[in-house]
Length: 61
Image (tube, rainbow, N blue to C red):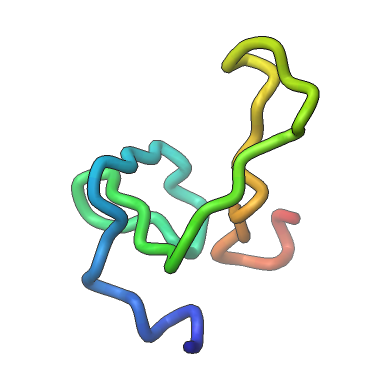
């Protein structure tokens, strides 16, 4: 599935504030098919990242 085919759908219960991500949708919903969060050795939420994040404009990342 292409990244843009999931537009309008969202992952229930997944709230995202990353407005510059291609998966960011209305009402701060994530529209990715699935997400990956890491790293595996994180001890608290401040040490985690969304590995699914892709910038809307590739010049940012």
